[in-house]
Image 1 (tube, rainbow, N blue to C red):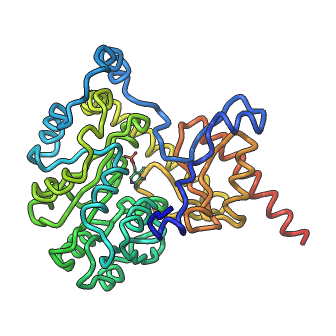
Image 2: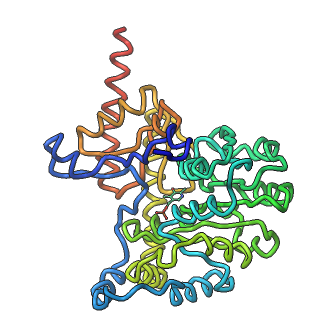
Image 3: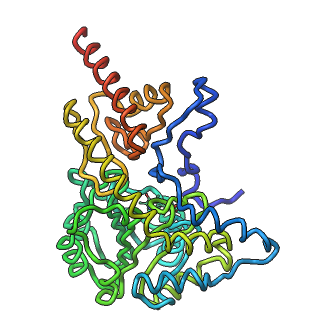
Length: 369
Ligand SMILES: *Cc1c(COP(=O)(O)O)cnc(C)c1O
């Protein structure tokens, strides 16, 4: 049959290892998943308590306008309600942007490696994808700006970047916004915004007042710990949001997910506790990596990309036998590395031991050869 040509060169998203499969394959009882940057501390108890009350009317369609969540977020962010578009995860907002702004004859610019959904969805829309290599894990913003021509419609900035964790600082951000033509949409994906440690990060929401071509993406999947419920959002000018809403399905977030996100917003203690623990455990892990001579990219997120003397796949396989699932750099465009989500203190300590063993035994082998 006559599918789009481009689909012949593409394949479906390959999910990370599922916990149950690993248990079965390796005869393990306990699995620690540090592969998808989920919150190792779970999610707010307030959300857990609120969900049963949402089960009474599953026969009714959700509020397609997400009225209550929209109002709460608009107050929190200081933007008007019609500047927000909700998605089934920010993944869906990425798709909405591609469907609204990309088509054959247009091009789009992004870093590499970065979050793969920008490229995937852009290709589906028939756009040309221009990928600009990172430098030391950071976006090469000048090189990205140079790629812009009259057919460029979207520039993607992932900050902190997945998979490296590197952040675009205040000055770099305002520089890129000033130099970028005003008819090119700039998307800043801030999926890990809540984890940022440095104070040198741009206030992208405030910048919306100045730049009508800006979209900021955020999500409840990462620091809020609600990945399973699928709620993310974009914040932009009313005009952009109106267009994205044309592409959006009328009931793309569920009543349970909307309400859970609303409650999660109120539990500031959970969020700050998550952030505090992540920072502490990340720094402890960095000290460990320093002590055994492994380097890693600067990270303002809840993961570290660690550079290795062995392949990412080898490290991945070794850790799997110990019950730890991490993400090999192989699939992320960086074969000699792994991306590791920062877990709880106990698990991170156990992980250190295995990483140490693996590196030591590879060095021994190296000496023999
Ligand atoms: C996890 C992630 C997302 C997707 O999050 P959802 O809201 O769960 O769809 C988007 N961007 C980046 C960079 C991510 O790492």
